[in-house]
Length: 62
Image (cartoon, rainbow, N blue to C red; front, side, top):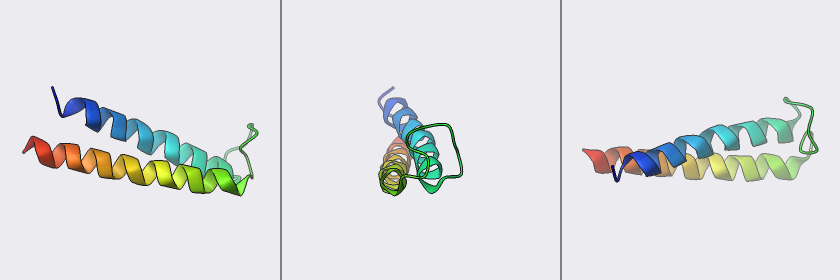
């Protein structure tokens, strides 16, 4: 039970960070974030934290 919460949070961060990065790049429209470069960097940072959190949770599981 201790590993599924960080892994789930990491996957959520990966998905949201990827969406925000794509919105910042202008590939996903319909938001105030579309085309704003700062959201690209915020999204990439969230994506990276999500990957680290997910990988560490899955490695801790073994």
